[in-house]
Length: 257
Image 1 (spheres, rainbow, N blue to C red):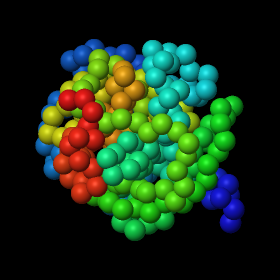
Image 2 (cartoon, rainbow, N blue to C red):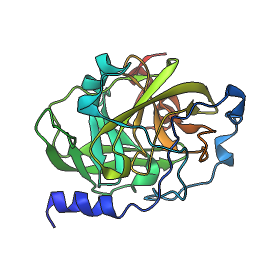
Image 3 (spheres, one colour):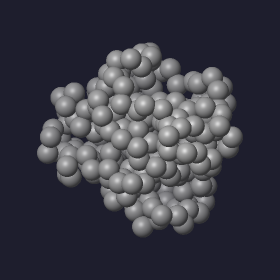
């Protein structure tokens, strides 16, 4: 099967979705967000499907027509965002040992050779790079994986940070579709997790980078945890937790704390 065929096949095999809608709700409707990550359901590698939609709508903007609050940093950050096997999202990040793609650990298994597609988007603003990569690290707690691409795209890797901002953004491939961006409210970070509300995600968004206002990667999106009214919060693992667990990444890779 051709690379493009593999992308389309992966996309149409996605059955569930877990989104958090843009409907505004009172602050006191948000759940308690600082609970132990060990209380969460443990995912298995390659488990990326959900059962229900969270929120009445999924409010995404195609990346090349986006003109919102993050417009000044989105076009640089989006170049580093990659579709993984047609069913997850990753980001090429800067690291002392060399750039590497970070994604969710439940998307892949150690030693896998996933298909990586850079610049899969509406109205592409550059050349599409289709390559494979090797999963060099994988964990479910924290939920992350590192992939070394066979060929590196000519893009600027995203920097890691531990500094949140009031608003966050996720550039992603929901349901394996062309790249989009969604924004939302930062809630809190504790127990190695970062929580955010009113920020849409779907199946396929797993592994996408959670960006602060400076376009730096604050965490990795791993879970949608809101209901059909838009109440609740989504969450992911912080870069600090990922770096602490990773033999490849080092503390100095986090450029802002």
